[in-house]
Amino acid sequence: MSLLACADLVAAGDPERFAATMAAPVATRAVLWPLYAANLEIARAPWASAEPVVAEMRLQWWINTIGELARGEVRPGHPVTEALAPMLAADPGLADLLTGIAEARRWDCWRDPFDDAGQFDAYLDGTSGNLMWAAARALGAPAGAEPAIRDFAWGAGLAAYLRAVPELEARGRFPVVDGRPEALRALAAEGRARIRRARAAALPRSVRPALWTGAGAARLLALAEREPGRIADGTLQLSAFAHKWALLSRAITGTV
Image (tube, rainbow, N blue to C red; front, side, top):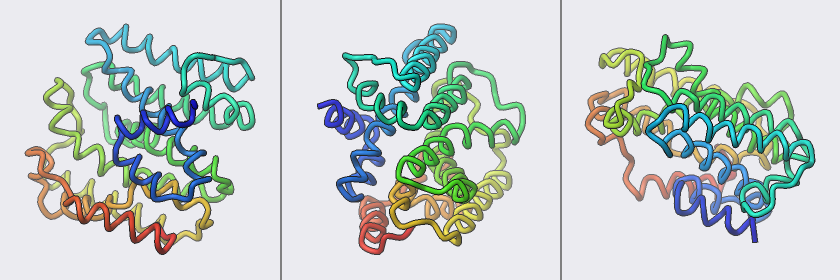
């Protein structure tokens, strides 16, 4: 029941990850649902209160709870913690990655801009990178695959982040370090380069569905590179057909 509840949470709150997971084999979905549901709950925590300290307390609850689950303690009554418990007890390293996501999300609680490009890079790696590596690790990825998967996750996370820029600005945040068109073009180009580098790596077929959440990322970044004005005006989007085809082609070919 907790696994189905996780799937329902992802379907309602993160439809793109839901679609990517539904394109994966059934056994793979059972591994991904708890991780994606936990990520959704963690991502929502900073926005649950306008008071930064209260928002950080919500994140801290997840940090504490994830640590308890990794130590074999039980948190009944919450479908996400119930589904996560056996996974974290079996592999406490997953707990470190989920905790890393929550720590990176502390930036979302406040209205301070990123100090520099390095801090922005760390945010993308701490959020998208930790989640994608956790998913790949749970699917049996070898340690040597981590750099390639984090590269892909950085590019995919950047594409999703750039789409969120108008909403972040509406909420009083300062989403990018440098908003000049040439800087945004360079950022998108870096994301595409990282995705290309990741695709050149020999990743096990069983691990590849963990990367399908970024199926359309390279095309989005190419669009951002050509027309950076789309980032601010909220039109950095693929058509519904293009997004579905990106997933379908990967499900058929088993590629990333």
